[in-house]
Length: 599
Image (cartoon, rainbow, N blue to C red; front, side, top):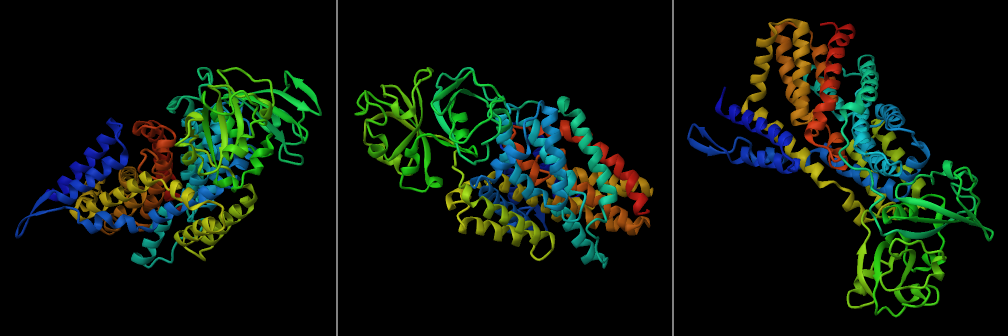
C-alpha cells in the first residue's frame, strides 16, 4: 500500500476510535484529522513535502451546495418555529401518546411518508424542534424519539429519487459517466419501499431495548421556584370549546392547573373533562420552563393586559427573571398600584415566592423582597437595569422566542413553495432553500438574529470536514485500493460482489458521509463491472441504496448529525441501534436488487 494511502487509512481509523471512545465534539475530532492530513510530511520526487490533502480540497466543502443548502434549511426551520407553525404540529398532529412506543408510532410513519416526497434533511430540520417540545410536554425522553425520527426520514427518503440528495448525486453520475438516460422518480421504490417498511417495524419492535435514555426527563420535584401564572382562553381560539384533556393542558411537565375562574365562579379540583370557554381565566402553578411554554400555547394569552401595552413588537421582546430587592420602590405595593409597566417598560407574567402559591390575580399581588418575577420586557430592559438596585438579579430566560402567529400562513406557504419548486425541478434544492430562507427573513417570519442563531455551525463544520476526509481517500489512492480488495475478496461471484459493494458503500457512508461514500464507490463499481463482466445497474442501485441508508454513525447522514446534540447521544448509540437495522437492510437489498435489476 502506498505511503499516503496507509497514512490516510490510519487517520480515518483514529477518527472512528476517537468518536466512539471519547466525548470530544465530533467537529473537533474531524478537523484535527483534516489538519493532520494537510500538514503530514510525505516523500516526493523532489524531496519531502507537506500535505496529503491539499488545502483547496480540505476547504472545498465550505462551497459545497449540500452544506449551503443545510444552512439555508436551518433558517427555514427557524421561520416555521418563530411563527408558531411547529407549535401547531406538536399540539394538533402528534397528539398525546400513552407510551414511548405509541409516541414513536405516531412519529415515524408520517415522517417516512413525507420524506419520500420532501428531501429528508429539511424535513428533520423542521420537525426536530417540534418533536423536542412535544417530548418535554409529554414527559418523554427525547432520546427515545429523535433517532427514530432521523432513521424514519432516511428510510422514507431512500424510496424515491428526490427523497435524499445522495440518490440525486448517484443519478447525476450515472447520466454523465455512462450515457444512461437516468432513473425515474419511482424506479428505486420497488426495492426501497419493502426495506423501509421492514426497517420501521424493526425500530418500533426493538427501540425499547436498543435505545438508551440519554437525557433525563424534566425533573419537577426538586425545583422550589414555582410561579403562579394566570392565562385567559381566547374566545374563538384554538382550544375554546375543547376539554382540558383534549386541549393538551392536562399533565404538562412541571405545571399544575390549580383552578378556573369563569364569570366570577371558581372551579377548583379541576377535572380533565371540563370544557373550556372563551374568557376563562386559568390559574397555573409551575416551574419557569413550563410557564414559558404557556406563553407559546395557541389559544391562550396572558391575563394581564399590560403585555399588550408594551410599545415594541412582541417577537422582539424577551422573557426575564428578576428578583425583587429590599431597595425596590415597589416593595409593599401591588403590581397594579406601583404601575410596574410604566416604571420598568415590562409586564409581570408570573410571580414566585419561596415555593408558595399566591392566591391573587397578578395585578393584585403585593411585592415582597425576594419575590422572583417572570417579566416580558423590551429588548433594552437588561441595559436599563445595570445601574439600578431595584432587583438583586436579572437574567434572560433561554430558548424563548415569542411566536408571531399572524405570519404562520406565510411561513407555511414558503415551505410548500420550496418543496414544490425543488420536487418539480424548477429550482435545485439549493436554489429553493436559499430563496425560502431569504423570504423568511424579508417577510418577517424570523428576524436576522433568529436566523443567525438557527444555523447549527457544529453540524456544518462536521459535514465539511467529512467531505475533506473523503477527498483525501481519493487523492491518496485509498479508494482505488479498496476496489482491488473487493475483487480479491469476492472471487468475481456476482451476488457476492453485489453484497460486498453494498456493505463497503454503507461502511464508507457511515465513516465519511453518505455523499462522499457514494462518490468514492461509483468509479470503483464501474471498474468492477468491467473487470468481472457484471451488469452495472444493480451495482449502481446498491451504491444508491446503501449510501441513502447510512444509519450506524452520526456523521453518515446530515439528519443524524442534527439530532446528535439535541438527543444527548453518543457515537455508540448509533451503532447499537443502527448496525442491526443496517444488517436487515443489507440482507433484503441483496435479495431484492437482482429481482428488478438482473446481475
